[in-house]
Image (cartoon, rainbow, N blue to C red; front, side, top):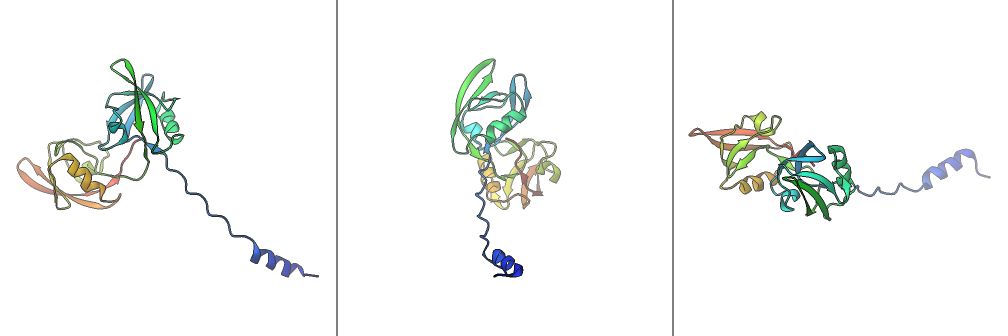
Length: 195
């Protein structure tokens, strides 16, 4: 007969190890900032190289549904993206200038994209959201970006390429032309917001 102590020791020693948990599939991502609109979600910003822009969504579009799911508010937009698979092509119904249109959009995977937080026309900063990393660091509308971490900038795509090689919370040196004077601004990158 086995004593209680030995039995407990045997159970503890021979209990199976827990199975590894499957990694969670990331939520699908459009690459937009949005707010509640009249009968849908109003697209305020489309991030450069984001699935939304590549799929034909434009700023001021009202997203009415994604993949057959109504998007009457930001919560419903978030739920629709969580229920969709990154990499899948889904129908997105938008209302543009009073007319509904169907766009087929290939969704991206939600991840921690590094974020400078500037709106650009070519290499000139047009605008910065109130809480953007660029604004907090001292970048201003009208600044012309010359270099990012020593890499020459000729187009807004050059800015995206330079930032995308970095990580959230890293600091990049951005040299700008501000009213004829070169100014160096150290910017701690944030995480791209949005849906």
